[in-house]
Amino acid sequence: MTTDTNSTQVHLAPLTRMEALYLLAGMRVGLLVCAEQGMTVERPGFHTVTGSELLVRTALGAQTAARLDEGPPVTYRAEALDGVTLKGWYATVTGTAEPVTDPDERHHYLATLPGFAASHGNQLLRIRPHLITGHRFQNLTTR
Image (cartoon, rainbow, N blue to C red; front, side, top):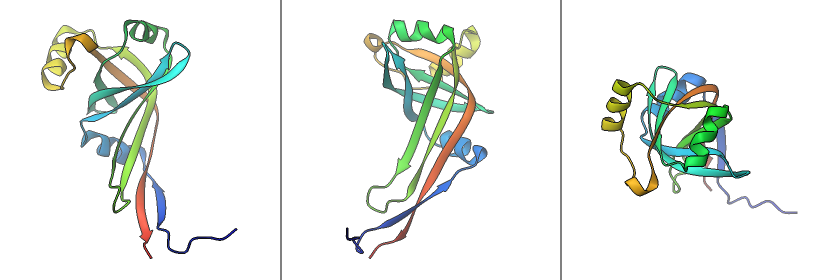
């Protein structure tokens, strides 16, 4: 087996929990990953970081939204990667999600986070992270 010496070498530098939350706070869009009908699905979401929690406005089917009451973990991820320079980062938050029910809080976040057309549904979720991970992509060499 030969190794291509002309390839780019990329280093993955782990993010701390605080770095990952800081980077997520600078983004507005990501993907919510959850189980639906026995399969893993991704749904787009708009988010904001409040303290150590994520508030996510997403489009979920009624069955999936109802399953959140059972407490299954969900994952939310966002990234900023440059396909040319191979620099950037990704961050992942895994934890429990619950619908935001307080009327004043719902009103605030529904007014400030972008939403989806009514036909796609809109759920406002609070994710309480149990695990926050991520990496920076660092382009070490280009030959």
